[in-house]
Image 1 (cartoon, rainbow, N blue to C red):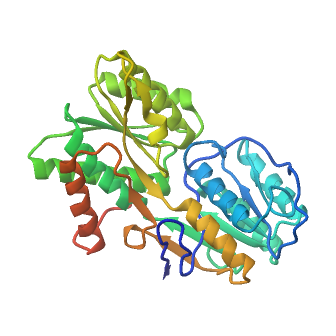
Image 2: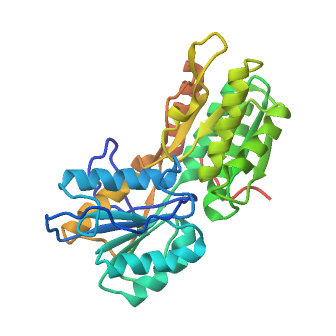
Length: 360
């Protein structure tokens, strides 16, 4: 298994790959304006059902690809870059076929749910580069697999929650059960417990799954129940379903009866936490967000493909040590930030090993 390095601030990685987590979108499939500029490589994204506007995983990948296109003076379209949005799982193969028929040279599957579709398409079209995000495909030379140590960044989120909660009750909302969301669940739970132990506190964790990555209404309903049970912080790893968590938190905070927090996922979700207090002051309830370098990896891998250096057949893994995952400063107190920084260093130094699956 080969280790990858991602440099922060979008610096080109040594050898990188793209990835997509547990989130997806709507259907685009059609190309907009083409580009008169010819290129050795054109790139397409196939989203999961959360969509490129999920404010999470898919959106990060699309933003990275747009940045790549801008750097190379390419436009959205068949001669540059494009996304194909999936309404449901039955859209994966047709969207990939549409992308290959349009001549795209590198195709990214954003999210583990596209694994089978990417594997099948890669075997059928060995001259096209494929990337699967958040899962691995072995034995296919034209596929790069990219996964992230989300358990490590989620551990930091758990420590932050433990040092912030006033009610000593926190929540976790997952999208669909599976290996990817297991990492978020396990890391967050262990981080909360570690923080509670350091503080001598007894913190309750309410855990629930929506069974969907694109159901904001379910996210809102679950969050409402958790906040009513006394949770004052909820970490969601649920793609667009998490938009409902933010909606519920905004409603509660704007009412002014109590302060509740949300921990964002995959990208900085500070913007989703903005609200006005009852006296009209600007405030924010996004405590922090776990980060996943999906956009940077997408951009870097597209560059490698353009340079004929696509690392086909390799599995790239990104963690805290590689700056592949992380946690934003957000609204953390200095005490919470100090605890997070210490935990991060302990993980990097190997003093703390974070589980990939929740304890049974």
